[in-house]
Amino acid sequence: MSPNRLENQRAERFSALYDDSYVDVLRFLARRTSLNAAEDVAHEVFLTAWRRLDDVPMLRDEARAWLFGTARNCLLREWREAGKRNELSVRIADAASTLRLSDEAQTADTRLDLASAWSRLDPSHQEVLSLAIWEQLPSSLAGTVLGISAQSYRVRLHRARSALRQHLDEPTPPQHFPSTVTEHQA
Image (cartoon, rainbow, N blue to C red; front, side, top):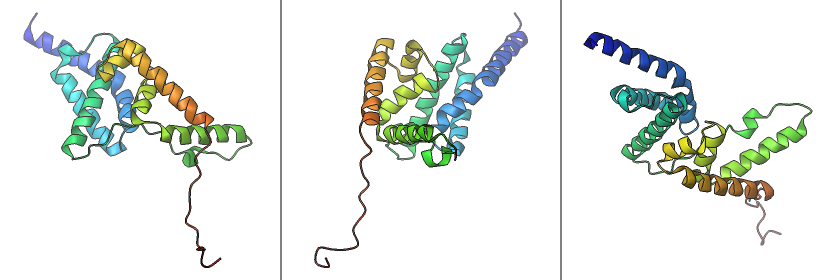
């Protein structure tokens, strides 16, 4: 096969990968950082994919998992370079901004409870749950993203679900507001 033909096939494969996965990778990153930073990191992910195209799996779901793993690593590297040593956490939409005025008070309460429980979850639990829920990855591919075995991922997923369930069952801790009246004034 001629070098031009090989290069054209490579470009076509990359183009198909990009078209199929860019939005998914961007969403994956946007749940973990600002949209501007997510766009920058997504471009870095696809630059890495172009350079290492032979390492990217051929099957769609496996390729997405590879891209998510690369995205996670790029984001962590960027945070390290920026001096931010925070753990990777997954954000969900602010409950107040997603709450719509409607007759479905039960749905609103559920959203508020979920948002509150999610914010109290450990970032590692958020990451494991997001791979299962938002990215809809099977255990084997989610494990690939995190660099662990499928069995280890399933154990982490079980623990994360239990933690979320526990936070949903517990009432939200009350917010303490400083009193304006002191003991001496009362």
